[in-house]
Amino acid sequence: MSIVRADVRVEGVKGAAEGTVLVDTGSAMTLVDREVGSRIGVKLTGRVVKLTVADGHEVKGELAIAERVIVDEEELPGAHIVLIAFPDELRRRLRELGLSTWCILGLTTLEILGLTPDVTRGKLKKTGILLV
Image 1 (cartoon, one colour):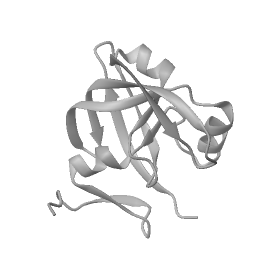
Image 2 (cartoon, one colour):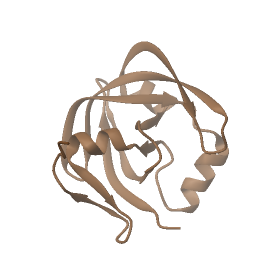
Image 3 (cartoon, rainbow, N blue to C red):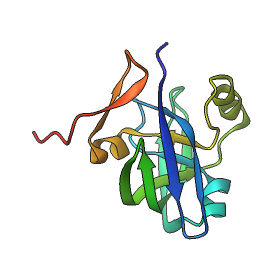
């Protein structure tokens, strides 16, 4: 299994969280642990979203807006993220991979920043925004 990693900083009005996180090529949205989102002060929108995970069950999260998300030095102000309570099992698996346990980076964030996962290198590459 090839893992793609990225250095991420998520900023809110009260602080920031940063680390090396998993790039999930199957996830549209960037997920941030609810406790971390609360601590750094992201703006809650009041919108609840349902996420379907790999095993088919649904998880509810809350759409939020970070002041800024920085991925491998590419900055996205006013980034939409989804806050969820990261289950202990997920945290354990991320920790085993040497990754931060509070964030999973989704493709929407990457597309806006013009970044693409390179599974052969395990990193992101700058490709620009594709218009079809």
